[in-house]
Every structure is written in structure tokens, then in C-alpha cells.
Amino acid sequence: KAGVTQTPRYLIKTRGQQVTLSCSPISGHRSVSWYQQTPGQGLQFLFEYFSETQRNKGNFPGRFSGRQFSNSRSEMNVSTLELGDSALYLCASQSGGVYNEQFFGPGTRLTVL
Amino acid sequence: AQSVTQLDSHVSVSEGTPVLLRCNYSSSYSPSLFWYVQHPNKGLQLLLKYTSAATLVKGINGFEAEFKKSETSFHLTKPSAHMSDAAEYFCVVREPSGTYKYIFGTGTRLKVLA
Image (cartoon, rainbow over the protein chains, first blue to last red):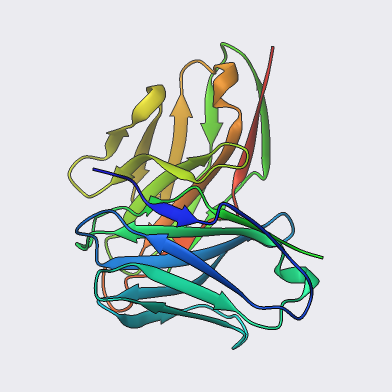
């Protein structure tokens, strides 16, 4: 089975722009979660989608949004980029079941100039 | 609410010596617990997971962890460190009901000295 894929792997944007990141989960996985990782704040949970519905949400401003499609692929969007949005964005998929682990993609490195 | 605490932000060991990375959790229920490893500029990889079947859990690359309910701990160990073990390690607890959120610890950076 192919792993979790994220595109693009690297992205450079300027302040005020918006960006869309994509995540394709492992085949059959219906849950997709997004995380932001920075040296200062560590790993922070953004949101989780399950069967096209947002199931959980972290404490991020409304500039951060996401969605999930019927094939379980997910996108996250960040509008009006700020310098502090520079981070590694990780996507994880999970098949369901209380004891099942998340499988992580390689991440998208976003740099905001 | 569930939470997880990784007691050391940095750990240094010499190659060939034992590794101990400490993790304590709080949970009102029987938790699911995981350890992940992250090498520089990579995604997270699962090392092992506790699913209530056995208290001593063996993972990949010689790592293991013991679930101790009385101490609410899930420490990660390895008998002999290798240079390739240098990475960041995350302890994770998952809520078994309700929101089913994964709660991540703040991470422990392991340095292995030659």
C-alpha cells in the first residue's frame, strides 16, 4: 500500500498570499488530520476530518481551513499568510478503530517571506 | 481531559549505552498510547503502540515500552543506542471515546555521542 502523500513538498510564499496544501491518505483510511510543526511551538493539532466532516479542531485562527473530499483526500488552506505561518505541515491518516495509529506523510515545508 | 508529559526535552547518551525516554500520561479511561520518532525534516514514524493486550510492548529498531498503570507511565527504552537513533521522539495518548483526539507530548530530542 502506498503511504500518505503530501504535495507540494516545499513552498515559498509572501505575506498576505494564500496557500493550499494537499494530502492523499492511505487507501481505505477515512480520517485525515493536519498538524503544524515549528521549532518554537512544537507539534500543534490543526483539525481532523472524517468522512468529509470536520470531527476535531485545534486552536488556530479562522485563516486556517480545510476540507475533505469523497475519496478521503484532504486539503488545507491558509489565507492572508503571516511570517509566523512558516512551518512544516504534517498530514496523518488513520483507518478508524480506537487503538489504531496515525500514519504520517513527509510534510510540506512552507516558508513565508 | 487526557494529557501527556514528556519529562525530558533533551537526552544525551553514548553509543552502545541504554536509552530511557520518559512519558507520563493522565487519563480517565484505559488509554491508547503510542511512541513516534521523527528524524530531521521527515514525517513521524510509529515505533510502537499500547493497545491493552500486553503491558510490555516491543517496537521497531529494538525499542520497547512498558505500560505501568499504577505510575501512569509509558517510558521508552532501548538496551543499546545506535548513532541512527538520534532523532526526536514523541509520546502520544489517544482519547478512547468522545472526540478520539490524539494528544502529543512536547517531544524529547535524543542525541547519541560517538
